[in-house]
Length: 186
Length: 310
Image (cartoon, rainbow over all chains, first blue to last red; front, side, top):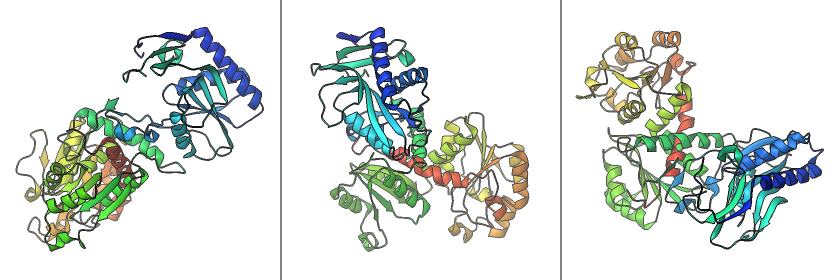
């Protein structure tokens, strides 16, 4: 379990996270309920448990989407200046991306630089028919023109705060809170 | 697991266990990249990789070039044959020129042991040793370990028999060292004239195949008999070497019977250290070594950072 950094404000407790996940799953189901080529792709690290939580909810609604995950490390625009290099997790897209409807899932969208990197990595695997973005938290402060089609909570926060998302799948608890920026926390 | 980048890769001996693991672990996702429609990532976009080979090489140089291209680097070959080197320019003068060109990575092969270290001390570029004299060939060792681990999963307790000209082989030195670091036992087989005067105490030395196979290796690693050795008095003839130390068809049969893996750093001398039957042996990992070489070299380039503190 990841150590809990200093907490400033709670944005969502477990029931709030569940409400947001249900709302996103409902919206995806409403749009793609009859689509046989639907796929969820989580952005490593916490986009993966977010996508898995959505997958469970879509299955409960009668859908059976494909599932994959991507590691964007090599697309980070700060890679060449990093003083500590992350181990590569690798991307895994175990289905045919051609002609698929893909929901790219990340737990937070803020500047959208991660999202840009994720799109580049994903499109290296093939050419989906449609690609949409889902984020549990849509934080204001976009630096690139990319916006989620599905989001759970929209927030505008002071620059010195960062959003920390925890999922029961991996962290032992579902919650979203803000904390000070700290390179040691993620 | 995260790791601080290093500036240079000069040998296996100076790597920590964590660094070896980091390079081997990251080679896996790089290898997965080869299955995609776009076999390229932007990791080294805008960086310049220069190959500086003072000795002939086809596969190692190509492997580095493919690796660097797949990382989106700009790759240049410094052509020694048509450069001022043939007019007598020293290695350090060449390096000073390259420094002015602001290259980021220099891949060096040189017949003189220690040349990559000398270059590394005189440039801010990351230097990768692609083979220096009898000293070291670290990326070969890393790709050998990666290839073997793909098959054996855990190398601890395994046994590798390295066959051939150990004394003059940088591959033998580096690969023997990394396999022992990863928990394997290593033994040597070859003519006495090609054995180092001193071998590590834990490495048995055999003079014939029967004794070596009685040691029960899991993998047989053949070394290339270098053509220049054929003209020197290390053994009577290529035919004699083949008969005594080569992987003959009969010995391929024994490997098959026992299910042993076969490796070779390439290029092979058919009829000397190996036969056509050996090349077609179903547990040969020779082609896998070539493919994995690209992934491992990508992993090394990902890890090294020009100007990083040593």
